[in-house]
Image (cartoon, rainbow, N blue to C red):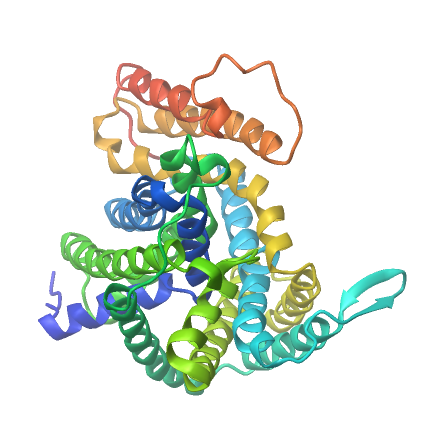
Length: 440
């Protein structure tokens, strides 16, 4: 079979593109806040965060490559469809898309508003006026760009990503060389369980979920470049993933240090966007704030368009009764509506959902990666994911504030990771169950 070879320049380009896929501007808000909360326990918290925000997405891409893009092939059709739908809703209109608008508002608008907390009552509900207006305008633009996609968005993205990377490198160097405040004492769960708290905080990036979709997208791009051989696809995808992982780790580590040494600049902050903006304003003045605001706003805009377009494409294929345009309008309106809960509240609402679905995604990645070891891959996938989902549901219920006592005996349940030991045991058991089978 004839297949194309990629040059070093092509491979680097693919790696930076993969990095840009994962580095949604929303991801910038979690490390500073976690660093501030972790304080002296920052190293452990950072390690946990890097496992779920860098390591698992990297492994997810490798798993997709190993499965040749068919990572859900061993699941029943209804289960595979339900999981795909859940992932698209989570990284689309439910959480990730509204978050882009809120991050753009927090970093791109709030620093320039004289009264950002003014409210009004509409139909009995209280709304932040500036946030309401901003979300309507922001997602109105998202809707128009999603309805009429073209090369403009791609070109803007190609310009914005290098600028954002340059800004982040400058930010990282300033954190390293400009003395900050003393690192404070850890707060809350970071006092006794910094590693697991950091691990769970990494869920918020949603990048392990996204890696399952991005992996398939990158494989399609490789095919379009003439790389048809599956071994070469895997090789190039792994190289791209390693480049992206290195970039993400660099950004996250520097932002952790920024949050931990922010001192008074982080006083009263309820999200990392406030810490990041205060730091840039303090160190680089108004021009720094303007530049950060502009780039983050445009980056959030392009990310939101990508998310709305991807969700519209997926659901149009799944249920073609509605057109792509109808889905794009619907998801834009839903995203604008959800955005009005506010950034801190949206993150809080998303936690129980992510606590439920993330164990399933992690289990799927792991069983795919070591799938050749199982005598019966179909059984292993279904059994391991079922166990992960069962215990993930109870972790999610607990994260929502409800008391669940019947599984208090499970190790790590107090830390929100009851799924780990049972899922691991099921993976081990699956190594010895059944005869070797192939997917029909």
